[in-house]
Image (cartoon, rainbow, N blue to C red; front, side, top):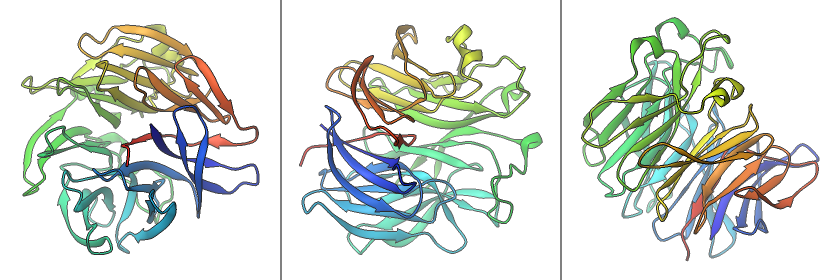
Amino acid sequence: MVYLSSRRLPDGGDTGTLLDGDGRILAEFPLAGRGHGGAVSPDGRFCVLFARRPGTNALVIDRVQGSLAQIIRARPDRHFYGHGFFGADGRLLFATENDFDGARGVLGIYDATDSYRRVGEFDTGGIGPHQCLSTADGRMAVIANGGIETHPGFPRRKLNLATMAPNVTRIDLRTGACLDRQALPDALRQLSLRHIAEAPDGAIWVGGQYQGPEQDTVPILAVARPGDGTLTPLDMLGEDGARARHYIGSVASNPRTGQIAVTAPRGGFAHILDGRTGQSLRRLEIPDVCGVAPLAAGFLFSDGQGGLWRDGETLSRLPGTAWDNHLTVLTAV
């Protein structure tokens, strides 16, 4: 299996990186700044690495040629939120974006058959969309709307903490119509919903980042099960919930095992969960762990100290480097 991520180099530069499941570097591509999440075409040939919010570019990498195929530029009145996905037939690329003057989230649409020309956008049903995915049947997009309003005129400031309204929205990928919108209880309105993964049974697992008082004790995981119609907070991490300092960095699903992995970089640990019950099957101590993606059995993890891990086993370490937040698994070509 091949994976896409980004990392900070010892000289302070950033690079997009292709690597295998044993931690070996296969190819690298220079970046103008930090990278974030990735997307892969259904045939596995092309992958896209999005710049970290509020980035304005994304790299399209041709895996067959081993080269940079194109750079996608955001519209002047939009910026990327670091995540996206290809449609089921590979023709369209979708990316979460900020309509910062309109204070709303959009899913930008790019035609991969026409030099990734931007051909439209769908409303995401909330503010601050972060991770998005296509459901397994390819019919819907699921979007984690974090609820935080930002504007490039006020760098890194959060403009609406008192009125946040995070949600998970499903939209029809043919029409952009909102099919379902699930929100947390009002008491958890400051839990920004960031990262998502779809389990084999269709459940959407959600990791959040709490924006309220540091001393609060709140769940930072939630699940939306098919047919349930509600987004259920999960307080399953016990004492680790406080140790995580209110932040889940990545969520991944293993379709072969049905397991879910969640990482807590601020706490230095990860949990592997049963995707049906939510029970923690294994707890891993990995300092500054954040990136996670499925292996054939288990999960591949990356950390901010240059380390790659197969579950709890160190695969490799690159001194002086730092892996960024996410790992994206790529299909074979």
